[in-house]
Image (cartoon, rainbow, N blue to C red):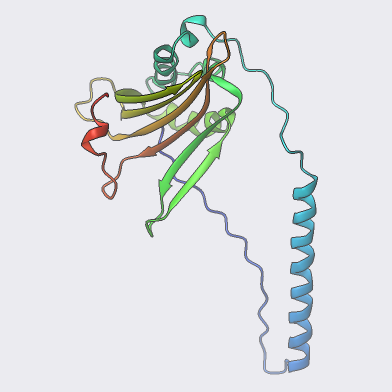
Length: 214
């Protein structure tokens, strides 16, 4: 999937007291007020969190073309196909929505400069909102290089090695990585429940075992 640079928003609270005429007792009062204000903010956030519903309401996805969801091979192929295309070509976003379960998630995993990892979770519409502009500016074609799968009952986990190019004829991909895809069958069709991806980097190259299907 498209590699994303996570956005970090930092909220800082504090106060600075300057001037030669500031008395120590005034400084202490200001610190107490700041502490009390912080406690109120945290208490309010906790109450707001407790008031949130356990699960947000979801809408039914668009009907999927039967050919897209009849098998694991078909739904994985549809996933790669629907996000690929030349610059400025509008993707069939309803088709993408139709592949995912109503509460399905996409999760991008990246590395910070200090080597720690960060996961950014998105709904399908979050993902669409993030990639629409980049897709309008440059071609993006993603294909499967290799795959390993495990299954039990109606649950399947696909570990799909991907490669991304700006044009189908590009000699080398500009990016490779792993799409970890969880799917289930409801008795009528396959659904993507979660899609988690991690791009290859110099610090974390893909091992040889993931470059061949097993």
